[in-house]
Amino acid sequence: MKRLFCLANLLFSIFYSLCAVDFKITEKTKIYDWVNEVFYDIEKGTLVQPKSYFVYDKNQVLSKEMNVENAYVIEYKGHEYAIDFNCIIPAETKDLFDPDILETTVEKNGKYWTYVEDCDILFSRDRKTYYEKNKAAIEHYEQEVRGSYDGPWYENVTISPSAIYNVSITLNNDSRVTLLVKNIHKTANGYKVLTEVLKFDSFEYDASYKFIKETFIPKAEITLKIVRDGEYLHFYTEDGRTIISCALVDEEFATQYENLIQTNKCDLSRVTWPRHADGTCDYETAVRLQSGKRYRASDNLRLRSSGSTAGKPVVTIGKGTQVKVLGIGAEQIVDGEAVGGHGFNDKNKVSGCLSEPVHNILCQDNQHDAQRRAHFGNGADNKACQRADAHFARQP
Image (cartoon, rainbow, N blue to C red; front, top):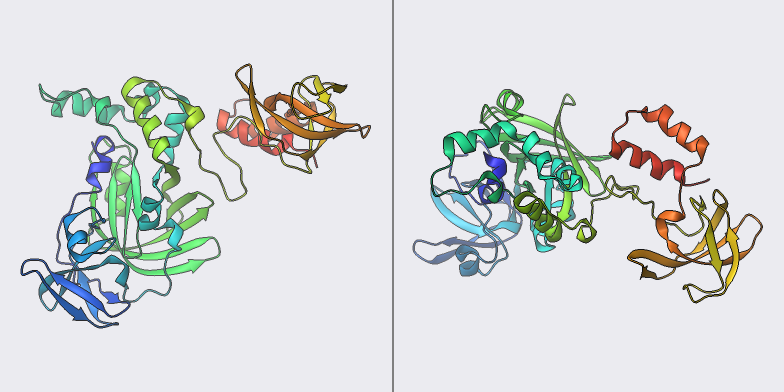
């Protein structure tokens, strides 16, 4: 039931004989024999073999003894040593991953690559969404695993973080797959990565069990296609089958996610949602105003001489009137709603400022609503409609 223990599982270290994969030292550095507490020099270009997929962070003993941010265990000439993790790369790789997607960078910034379904669950604001997606695993835990001193299933649930390094990848949803990286090749929209399957953890009650078992055979090579879209990473097999999609989230997201699962309560106003490369977001219901763009008023709006409710009314903009945003003012809270002193002019070139809830500024006219229905259908899911709203609300 790895979804329930996923964060702890990422910290689990297993040692293997992995001589099929070589890593290369990128600069002259030190290797550490922690048994005898002795350091040795190792030259740039030396080939070594991995002995673990676990990366020791700066707060753990091995990294502290070496005085490095991250330590890693290798095999060299038949002995095990620790090395600065930043000094090794796959021996045969053509390229490397961009630094900002690597776990060492992401973790330092207090963020995680989590399963996109974690975003869907939090956005639903209903613990039942998680239960329905993981019903078989939860029932297995409650009936077969839970002891008399164990709490109910929802007490142990966290987000499902994946981890991307230049030498290894761990993908985590209801199953977990660990891969050693052999070769990274940059593409126009991401990467093509040759890997070796180290291990997978999946059980028959996991939704992805059949796919994982058939696709990720231990010690077999598999090529992944990784597509980057802003704060999203999409992982595919070479023949185009979806493995997992990950989104970049922060500590507050994790906190609200855990609150939702444990108490069925959360505060989405504190959550920063991931964005696509074009700036759009699947989890925001309001369209963000952009200076210089044209919009329609979804209600009658008072245009004022200054950017606050104290400003003298200039004119009332009628519902459906097209306006152009001249500037974005500071946000204020009025009667519990976010408002801003936004500079506008209407079709008659009358200029002024609005102090209105932002959601009153934007709407789709009938033509755009018809376009949305034609494109997505009357039964389109909420997220698809929100993406359509964001697209069609903005006037050319």
